[in-house]
Image 1 (cartoon, one colour):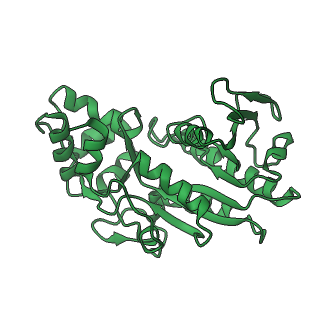
Image 2: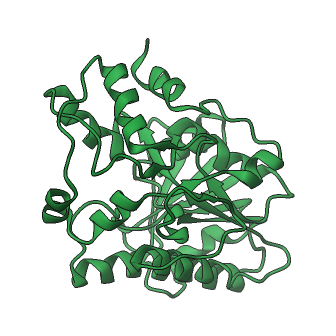
Image 3: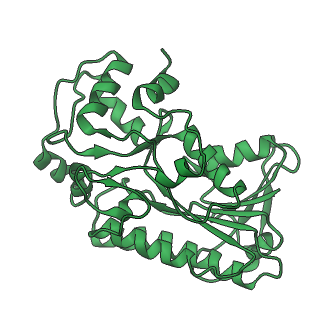
Length: 310
């Protein structure tokens, strides 16, 4: 298959591209590091392997769009990291533009090519549901309120502009993806290493997570399964409270939970983003389970054993 991935150099896209390439698929990774339309094959990835293609995600199509013509799947993972800094007005604008414009560019190109991809898997996040306490949330739950919810709703609307009958649209609403090499878990580990890890705020807020291997296999399953359309929650079937997460991480690292982070201190550090951290969401992957996806790591202790070893 020819697989086109935007955001294919990041924490999620890079291992996904490598997994496809190792199986002999032709992987094209859209990147801003090359001139639009330029190609560069990654040495050591075999044949056909991974080829980087320069693009400009400005809301329009461009010379890069030729790689979408005849592609089997397009996987859209483009977007600036949500938790890489305070949510200043300028950064909020970048977070929106990096997602909406990239998705709009892909949608515009898919609508224009002669042989559109058979499936378009586009990113979103469980932030779509907004703060919801301990209320279980499924794909049938409505959009919530707040910056993240509004961003996710608009992000999904851009993907929904792909209206070609030949292209199946699936939206992956990702929870917090766990793997020790990066992402949220790499930042969680540090205070525990220094014996100062603990819950955040009350600890009662829910944390909707997924092991990175499950996330990758779920996305690949979405590409393959013809019946998968619309939103799919990419979260483990057993979300945990922040207190339970801290306990499990402490056990995995053989470290006690000593110092909880008070809410006011968190707000001083990360600003408005703290609201989404201290309120939490209890998201259930109802559609994935109903359609037969089997999770390798359904509970947090299993996930941490897989990440850190016994």
